[in-house]
Image (cartoon, rainbow, N blue to C red; front, side, top):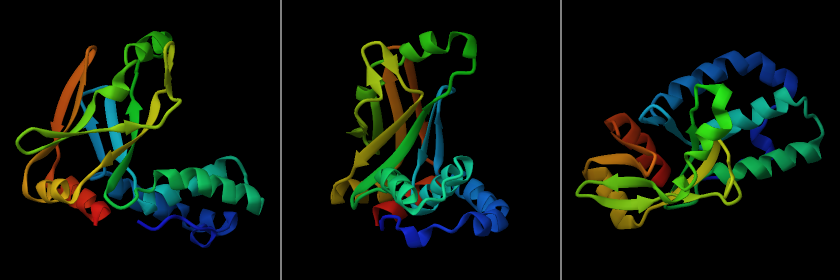
Length: 190
């Protein structure tokens, strides 16, 4: 998938004019790219459109206008664009009770070893997590993950059922992928 360049980003005033429409398009797109795995974990599989939206929103929220800073944001967010044979996702740990947020998040320590893409007969592909978002006594509620697919695994996704699995000592959930979600992910895999 092609990385984002400065030419993909519109200026602040042009973005404001099209923001409502772009936002609706992204919300509609994410209906098939967001996967809730139980009630506390969700993944959003990223592509060019979702990443461009995130960049535009960050530039808007932070009032970033300097071209060098815009390039820096693009470089950071380009890490979410999958390389060939990959799916990349943002994983959210959704903690509703904010009064004990730290304690609730700490229950997910070690999740970076326990998230899988399951294909058909039980073959699994383990998620690779971005380093530095989980430590011995701290974990971020937002994680960035990658699933690497071989050509055979991509064909298995095309031909078989698939699911996302979290098999952690404090949290167990599995959700099958819908046909629409599989179709979106197969586009990403080429």
